[in-house]
Image (cartoon, rainbow, N blue to C red; front, side):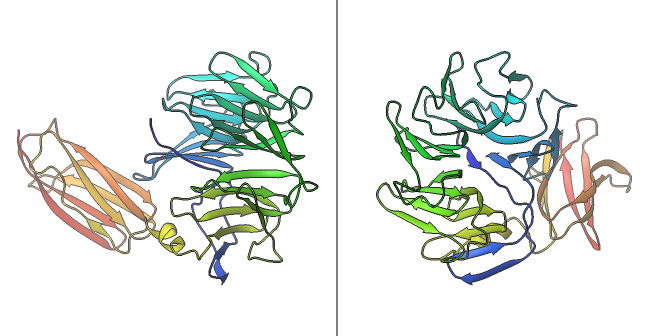
Length: 370
């Protein structure tokens, strides 16, 4: 089974970084991405203007919207990728499935989807899609059959805003009327009156490696270990705003918490790797690496790194200095990149490739051997 990292926020840039407490780091500005999944080098980003596919290695971006794809609405609320690589895209116009070529759209009019306003998607270990909607409840879709849970036929207390599935297969469902747990048979609802939940509007849920539930609400962030509730607000932590909109837990255990007042990063015991995470893909210098393989026939890969945003040119020349190929010619953000040179139409011989980025220029030799 393929491994996918599911995020509800993805950050391209940060403007101001400050920390009052070593366990917390706050960012005051984030991008307007609403939902994100990472699939290898590709980052799929849902926004209020459509869907973006961003390649972290090449920097290439592909934009999907109602005008150029089968996307039913430009407001993309949620994303999930199944074990076959299909993208499941929740929008304000229905649910879309994209296999890389074909779009399939599910709405109230052509399926068992109970509402065209999709707020959240989660996929369980059996491949079932759990779809939280506004006004229609929670839907389970196994690829053929739709099963709908709502306030009249289940213990669901209100419209579904978010959903997460734990290691035991329990569904944790954030609603406008509290937090619901569904084990497939029994519903358990947590509210401000019967638990430590700080607010009944639950916007987001994330589950860490120890099984703790991190619950974003309109009144702060709660951690629930199954017995004890711990609540973080602006009064007892560096949370920048009590209205929590999204939560992401990275591989280092840092909790990335989106709020109406900015982004906070929290880790019990101290956030020790956030700067490294934020900057690990930003090189400190310009470098042009030797192509591989070399000699080659007929293709080779050229790797280079850019330390700052600017215009980049990568061209190939023959022994007489005549340009034979332009591999890159345009603006590039700071980062690491690769380019493939296909010389199938060129004769064997020695060639040179030159990288120009701002005032940086470097040339290396490659050998085509047919």
